[in-house]
Length: 115
Image (cartoon, rainbow, N blue to C red; front, side, top):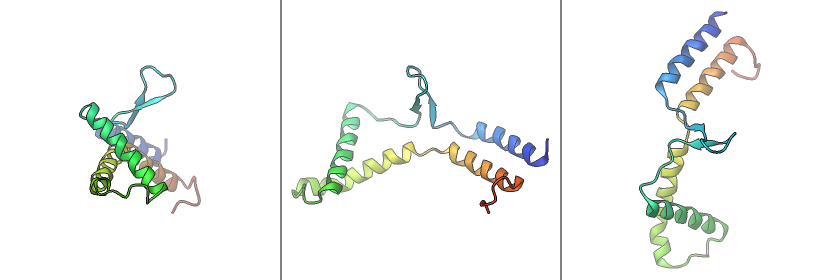
């Protein structure tokens, strides 16, 4: 085994200890994954989050759809809710894994376009 392969394997072992995977195999649906870091406090939080996503999607499609003050007041909260969910869904450990693989590819010159 060459030194780059040994370094990659050592780095992968370290990464496996550092990060919890974002996606895990789903317990009921074969070939599907469940998102590990997605969570809500209760049904109300889930419904408010879905409402925020729907509102923002509809607002993008038709900006004049919601002209009332109540919707405009809540828009900042809606955006905040959607950003929180997006942040929870972002893979953490997988990003580090891809960085390690790209470093290995570059060191081994397996891809000429990686600088």
